[in-house]
Length: 269
Image (cartoon, rainbow, N blue to C red; front, top):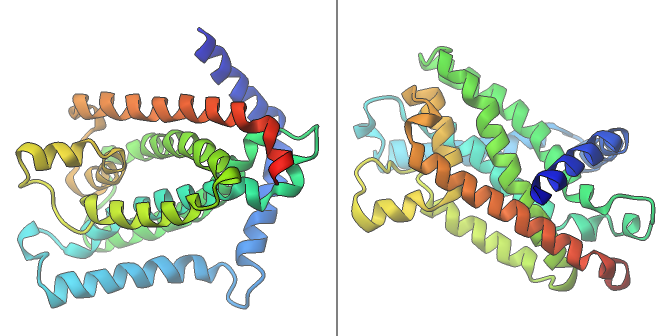
């Protein structure tokens, strides 16, 4: 019951602080994208160049996408775009307390919402990239279906997992700045371990178990199942239960660690 109370309180705080959150998200967005000549265009250039490079190398150079049974580009993009959200959300949330250290010393400010500011900024970009994803899959003949109503569900999955991880990593980074570099290595490692540019269907035994234990796989594959394969999330009951156990674990542990270390933030920063 205490966890339910804390979750209710968390949502209440977000609602009460919604105007502050909105202003800080707008400030963060403006600082990141609107201070350059191309502005928000960079938010699209970087991921699209990355996607096109992998598409060219894998599909044209190595011809590894020929056995899929459908076009490689929409298959690739359907998992790459949620991965960008995970990668950028985790990286930005981890450095949030250091970036907003000037707010830590303000006693009236709810420090717990700072990682959310970074996540919401990344979420805005993800929503725009989602439009790009929809355009690409439609151009390749994957038209809207009933399965598309799952998109908010997988967004929720990503947010719950990233909020918990964001609280945990941002709290630790105040005291151990190496966390930032560790996350960059972590992101690179999990990009290749997660079936984003390679199919997982042929895996069995320990290899398949290793993939299933990766919580990011549930999200990236969920997008792919929604847009390409046309499957419901509840068709994989065991994976769904496992993912939510992991997501809730990080949410609870992240909240506890964040609260335990909060009295020391101002002194260290």
